[in-house]
Image (cartoon, rainbow, N blue to C red; front, side, top):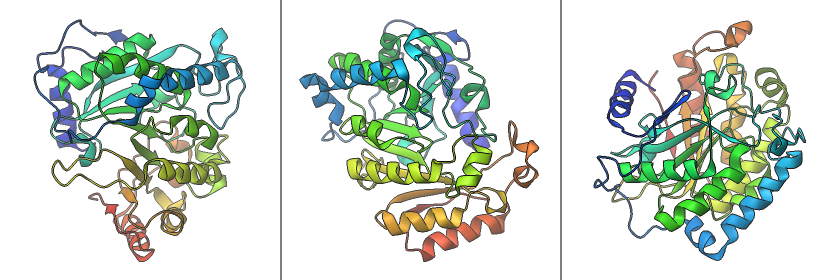
Length: 349
């Protein structure tokens, strides 16, 4: 997030009467002072999860996935921990929902942020365990607070009342059951915003199939196309390239290509891919963009990101203990263009 967006984000936090931050819950009853502000939305768009809730399918899927936490296999680590009994899996999550924050967010892609922000819920813990994670206090040190499924439903509805354009669930993999069950509770109370599934990309195809018709927008990383790099910088994630390619193919099958609405400038449905360029091409960015061009539609939305910043344990790895250079970034953009990708987002560097 650049300085301007960070200032705007902090200003909005200061004006929000209901928010979860760090280890303190400040949710208040009733509607926010912005309750009468409506999101700039396409009135013709209805998220698929609404119909699934009406038929009972949404709740049924959530309950099936919840049972799988008894020997958890929701993420590719397949740790088989009984999270329902309170044990923490390899992702460091147990069976209870833990959330770090819920607020309008202005640091996402402009097609999600719009004028009122993306309604972002940051879940605590993460399965990928990146050594350079910029949000390591949340993803690996567990900064957050235990919440109920009803609490999550309340947060979604609050973000909608505030005027956010979507519900953006960040690092959701280990809490998919809770999310589906919270949606089931929120829909009868009027939830109707597109659901953004904001993920590292390391997702099991068989689990993603439970999200078919639930997720409107997949906002997915494609971090590495090198198994050894994945294992080194996200310990234990040797399968990342193989699993993520299969996951991206499934995401594209479910929601198709993401294009902004001509009237609102917002995206309501589709696959959006992020790739973070890293120093020394350790992630093999060249192979990442070429794979996308060869295996997904040429107009797939791809955000080539330049903001890599060494954080957390990155300084233990000299090759990634620095920012990237202009030439490293521009080289990736050139390769992506030459590969035929036509829907690129670029960042300043």
